[in-house]
Structures are given as structure tokens and as C-alpha cells.
Image (cartoon, rainbow, N blue to C red; front, side, top):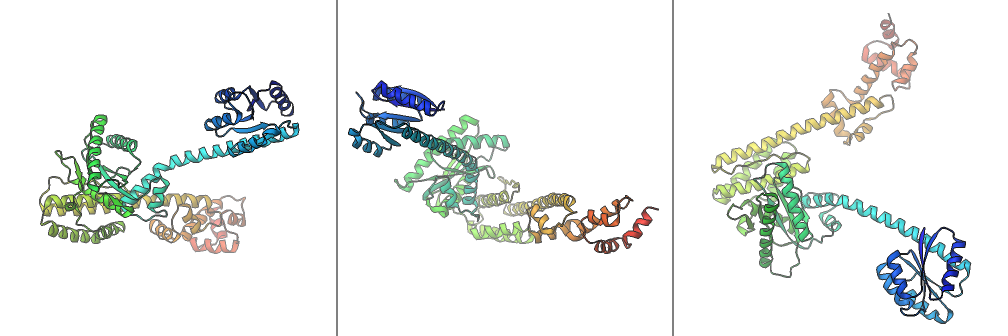
Length: 512
């Protein structure tokens, strides 16, 4: 049922048009009347009609004035101008305002019906498009948090993905020009539920203040990336960040009772600059104290460990090469001692920053990061030992996790083979089922089972054949086909290879 408003100062015109519509298109329209432009505006506002027939020449507010007012409130309403020949030029002006069509009095029945059918078809199409748009908006709203997480992690970790960080930022309606990173750390909040409360509270606050990117929690800290329009000098901009950070701390304290510390990076340009700002904010957050809980980045805080050194260490960890990882860490540690002149406090800060990055790397590998803290260690040799033990623990955990994952995938593969072994099943088919490369799957399967894939399937078929041989009603040929072989001679050769007996001989002994 559609809503139709007829606006005309002549009652006979309105009634005649209504009668014509009801007869030609019964039970399709609820029809309302308006005798002038003012009433048309009021009834349009009240009933929100799908279609309006508007006479141009009416007392008081004229038709075109009413059209202008109505369209601002109801842009999707289809408006048809109705006019006499004398006002044809006005009808053309109405079309420039965006009305759907016009009718010249006296309009024929066929003309009106055809016009209404076209407009109702357009309404159905428009509603369908709107429904699809709403579904798309809903889908995007569900994907936005995932996209935001991916974008921030790419900034923090400098990972390589199919979509680059600029593409993701544009999907989130954030142009990656100038910007600054802020690290919100809560090292004293150990409970996961409390961490979640602080995270949600901080995210709600910063999102309500400005369009920004918020990362997930990593090693008891989160990063916020703020786009910046450089209308002010950088030092003035950083002063504004300091002021806002103080207000954020107060808000979180009021809402959760928890105390946070905040590191603020400098204003930088582009994805590489935003990443650098995050590094600065992370380093600054390590310098926070109870007396100074908000720290802006200072140049002397620049990290002594290069990105290349860090990448080499992560690579050694990723392939679980403990010896190479420890050697790389010792090289970095010696360099830290030299650069910092054995400043234990600064070395701790550098190491914690490094381990924070390693933890992020582990999360990207879907592994739960190890937590490390040595706030009271000032002895340099103890710091080195604690750091090396951290690396050993990480690699040990990765090996355990990989073994568990391999066991799970092997179980899925075995179940799939059990369901499909009577078919022409291939190694590639099973590897695809468990989402692994076929070469890697072949090696993993052999390592975990002690058999090649083909031998495993062959032995499963032969064991099933042995069971079926107990059923005297089945011929050997039928058994051959039931276990996935199509050539009885080939089946006989395979069976003898596995049992050292021909199928017929084996069955005779079995049935004695």
C-alpha cells in the first residue's frame, strides 16, 4: 500500500483524480487531499506520502514553493507537478527543482495510470537499494573494528599484508597525513577483566573527542593514532596533547579507579612517520613515574636498537632458532651497554620496548605473548640473563604451540581421510582441507604418523578389507570396490604387499 497526496484547490479535480486512481489501481493507495500549499506541507509532514500530485497554481503558498519545502524534508518522495497549458513554463522550472514528472490538465486516465505504475516501480527499486545499502552499512560496521585492529597493528609492527596501511586507513575515513601517536599503559593492572574495563573506557573517551585509530591491548598498553591538522606549531600541538592526556587520566581514574601512564609521540607525516611516533610514545611511556605519569617524547629517548636488529631477532625467533636468537640478543645487549654507558635504567627501558615488540610479533603469530618485568634489577649481568631466559621461554612456548597445532591439524586430516578413503583421495585434497601447503603437509604428515600419505591410505584400505572379508556374502571383487580400488588385480598386489598373502589365501585362513 502506497501513500498518495493530491494537492489542488479544486475539490472536483481532487475527487476526480482519486476516483480514477482507485478504479484503475484498486487497494494500492491510501489517498489524502490538500486544498492549498500550506495544507500540502502539513499533510506531507504528517503522512510522509510516497507520491504527491501538486497543482502549481493554488491560493496562498503556491505549488512550487510547497515543493521546495517538502523536498527538503522528504527527499525520497516522488512529486508530480499538475498544471494547465498556460503554466507549462512553470512545469519546466519544477523539473529543474528535481520533481519526478509533470502532468498537463486534463490528463488522460491511461497517462495517469502509466505514470503511477512507473513511480511505484521506482519506489520498489529505491527501497530495495536502501535495504541493500543498510545491509552493507551493517556489514561494514561489523568489519570496522577488525579493520581498525589490522591497521593499527600494521603501524605498530610494520607488517606486510595484501592491503597496505594507507588503504585500510582510508576505509576507516582517516587520511594518513600528519599525526601523532599516544601510548596508554597500565602496567599495574594485571587482571584481564580490569584491563578490558580500562581499555573500553579509554577507547570510548578518545573516540568521543576525535576521529582516531585505537589499537588492541598489547603487553598492558594500547596505542591511539590521532590525525593532526598542522594549524599550530608542533610544540603547541604537543602541549595540547599533554592537556588532553591529563583529562583522559582523570576520566579513567573516575570511571575505573585505575591509574594509567601516557607516552606522547611527536607529530609526524605519513605511515612511516606515524610508526615512528608510536615508537617515540612507547619509549616515553617507559619513562613515566608516579610523580610524572604523562611523558612527551624527548630526543634523548630515541631507541638504541635499530629496526634491522629487531627484525633479525624476530626472524630467529620465528624459525625457533634459539642459538641464533640468543647470539643476536647478546650483540644488541653489548651495543646497549656501550651506547648508554652502562645506564641500567635506560637499558631496562630499551629492553622492555624490544620485548614489547616481540610480544606484538607473537600476537601476530596467534601466540599468547610472554610477560616480562624486571623493575628492581640494576645488575647488568642479571639483566642479560633475564633477557636471554625470556627469549628461551618464548621459543619453547612457540615449539609447544606448534606441536599442539600440528596435532590438531593431523587429527582433522585423519578424520577427513577416514571419511573419504573409499574415493580417489589425494594428498593435495587433504592439504587443502586443513589449509596447509601440500609440500609442508606431506612432511608434517610423515613426521607425525611415521608413514607417507599414500602408505597411510593404503594401510587403512587394507585394514578395512580384512574386516569385510569376514562377510562371506561379499566377493573379493566387491570388497575391492568398497575400499576404493577399481582394479581387482591391483588390489591383490597391494594386499599381498601389506600382508605377504594373497587376498584369497588370507580369507581362507580367516574363515577356517
